[in-house]
Image 1 (cartoon, rainbow, N blue to C red):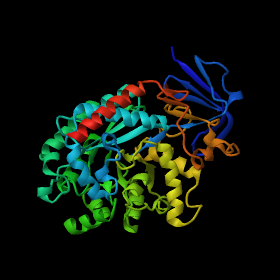
Image 2: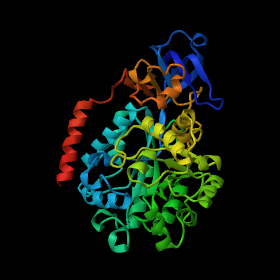
Image 3: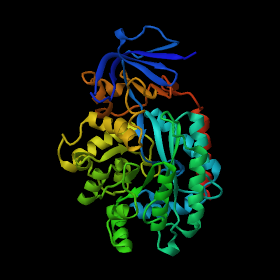
Image 4: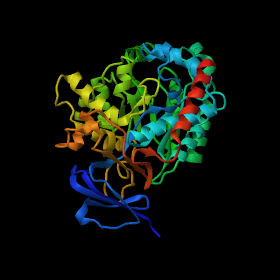
Length: 454
């Protein structure tokens, strides 16, 4: 028999639907893993197999994280990388990451997912490009299945070592690009789910123009399209990134992306802090997506991405927390707040981005970027049951009850009270249910120390 869950009496239900309806005293009915009704509490059934009273809460779609490197949670606040820009930051961390084990991959992914889920994230794309000591994408898939997160695993790669003019040390790269392509194909065929309610999807993601060859960029694009999966990489993140593309390839990052086949509805690029006007128009015209990661861009002094200009040119934009060693957190609601704030700073204009626009990027925007706008990112009948609720009685929201939805970002972001992913309650009254956090944190800290000590 189908199982039903009724969420009722919410102070406001922010649907993020095309009409951007905000329903006072709202309710959502879930049947198994799908939303079956959304509306005022008085208009929905009064009973269900389970009923959660959300009086004094904001209810909205789960947040979508479009760019992450979960393994990096093992190296937060590493002293050698605290005050470095991107290339120096990577140079300090690559040798440390060279000691990562499969166990470390799984535990760091669990830690990242747990923190994301507590911040309201229900879907995450993880750009996993580092494979040493027997690590595989399956290490992260294991974490996603245990915690119940909707997970897009990006099988990335770094293959261009220092001896070939790349940034990473030779001993941490995958030297055989043919073997990389075969592994990418294996992982997709073994794990990618094409269903519209898929919990696990796989994308292909050579890390960047300064860590792989142009040939791998081209061949992985062909492979991804043959397999019917998305493609993801880093583009135009900082000034050194621009200089590398000009010096090595004689073109801008956007030109390089176009020349190697990395534009289109099936592609999204991380950062794009220094995407020029040609690149913005190119991405808008071709349906190419962007993962905006404001905290990481500020942490590494990369700059502030021209998101307002991108949106005005029709570019698909979602939010990402980026790596947990360049943020150094996994707080997607906090990322939405920063997206709102940095847009205002860049343009010296308080209307450059509103709280609702930032929340739209965190939900609908991310769903579009990941090719899932028809099944996640909004509260509507037929959509996957991914929902989050925030308790307005938290002191952070005191005085913000006139506009409780906007107060989620104008006030200091807090953890969710409830999170439901695919119809399953994974955060219940602020407590993460799939895993014991103290045990995970102790394990994670032990492995992080082991990693840094070598």
